[in-house]
Length: 196
Image (cartoon, rainbow, N blue to C red; front, side, top):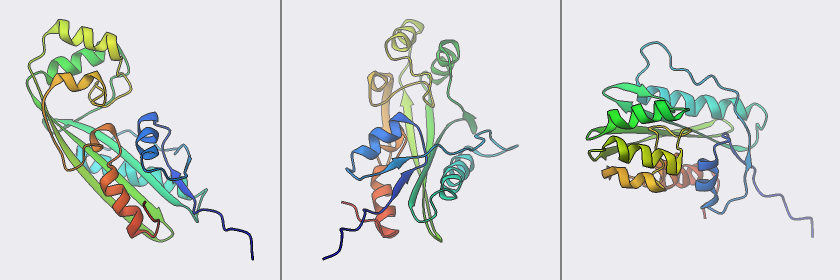
């Protein structure tokens, strides 16, 4: 009887703690690799196209180092009135983003790409978030409590940020956090990686 074969290699092309926490839910062995990708939008690039391009670029960048592995790349872009809204990075920008979002609907494009050999699977989830009317004191209290400066849209829907919303419309509740697990599990199975 030979030695047991090693489990298939699964690589998450992201250092995002949020994506790692989501992928942990699938209870799969995986490794993390940091993709070296310029995330700046191209001239006149639509938010949906940006999310798809970056998800693929991240997966491709990591596949070069792990050619036999299953690679997961993902990216999320917040859209307001057709424009991409980036991560705030600081309290003042986050305050301005949430003040502008008050009473409005924002769309989040979360793209995921799975690469394995010559296979390339790509999907984009659209999540619509309707914000309730927010006053300045509510925004300030929220930002002090959660400091979501590394999140698209300046909130964490898996935490206190959920209190900022009137509604969320999506096919996958995990997409808004950064990795749509329903479709990812389907894509991995289609690429020959069994889940569960």
